[in-house]
Length: 223
Image: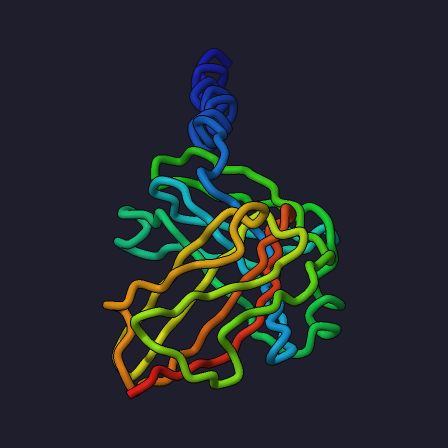
């Protein structure tokens, strides 16, 4: 009889200790956890963007307001020991009604686990509210003097405004973000622009809800 009792004790101890040994050590927030839409009014397309940042995580998932797991990523094999620190991705961009019907507004939960076994948890609110399309100049293929290019815009309600000018052939990319309430013009550094080239220009109006509304166009420089 005593032998049977003695033989059961390790099993009882094991059952009691397993949840403590296997459970997460602590729970902390992601350093960055964002969910927002980018609405291109020129192309009339819409995409969801997710930004996550935390030190050394090996698993992450996103839960929608409908309590559905809509995204899951797990580092495998040796990479799971190294971990991931940053992740940014964007959905495909069909028509805005298609995207909005699949991704409801509300609180999206981000859950993860670090390589050390700690839990990560944050939330972000996704909104279906968008700022109106900004206006921009120069645009429409306008030809300008590369030594004196001033970009002007109007973006009512924007918390921030991002200006992107690029020429893929030259590998040139000029990207600046300014306060939306105080700045409506920007002098482009002459050394950035070559003569006789066409440039794509985008203005992104960024709202307090982090949604982006953008307009894109082109301008050319004099030979």
